[in-house]
Image (cartoon, rainbow, N blue to C red; front, top):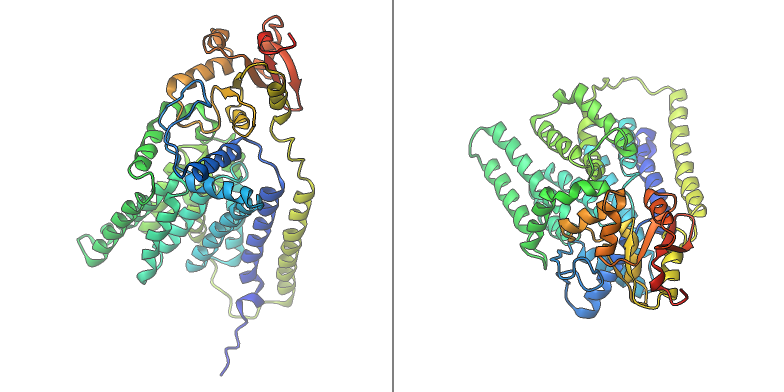
Length: 480
């Protein structure tokens, strides 16, 4: 006898989460492919990929392109991402890596849906989980390697929650993740949390405990399967304790000033606070660990959401399903909701695509190129937004800069001088003199813009756009 139950695609409650995933991914594809980069990360990452292609080696130190720290040790943890970015541009498909970044977030959302379904979460709450996770990414999404960490965490947790041999797929996932981003150490951490939960449950060295411990060890060893070897864990540990973290905005504390936190993490935190005690010991351990991660830095908001959303929403008490057929009015409302979301899945990506600005307006290319065109010697540039200086890596004319978007390998002394100039503290002009900086790219109407404008005999504005202004010392220009 045939099963009389409707298929999942004929049930609006089951279909809605997948339509929500499609809507979110559609918008992200439009943003990733059509919108130009708003920071210089993609520029230096492509430059790194080009170096790997041409030199057949991964650079391990900063070069002469920076005058503040040439020779400083560098661990390019995003080397494979950079290589893919450069190959895409060289092969005439520059949209490929941006497209993949959007689809990677889609993978993370799919894992959230599957984890919710495994816990018996309703379609409506699963859809809420998808939307909450998408809101958690609003301040962080871009063509950046860190999106791999979101999908990596979601996939690893889904695999760890699986039964049988599938759980060992965590190891190859960890190897791929390790070559793309240093957030890979979340993989052995998650495996370790699951092992702790098993130990607390079995209260002894059982077969399952040994299995979990072996899996944790395998994940830890998998993080070393990269050309960087032991330097990758050294880099990750060093970054956790680095004094420069408080100088980089995305490593700042998580607070109510973050839209992503308020919309994408706070609802989950509150849900856990009210209903979290209903979860299993394992879920409570995982939720507690990722909550600590959440409040360690604002950049961890998306990771927290993808990891914890299924746990939080599964803890909400559910009504027992009614045995009576669903009233026709409710069916019509449910299908209307699915249809509306499907329309949104089409309309918003189209609107986002059409709203994309021109590719040369997101970064200050015009002031930077004006400097290179007018300078009679190779300029030494300071950028108020340090990521802007990555522009000079891609320009054919030589220029050296104080600091660029790579950020992490620059020593503390460089960061200290950067903050002195940026904040206009006592001695800011002494730093510019001592470092022999003869060009400064500032944000329009910033404090540094006002300081330089107030010294017209020492600094001249030669070019500007909507967001930035370029100042130079008169001696740098042939016309002066």
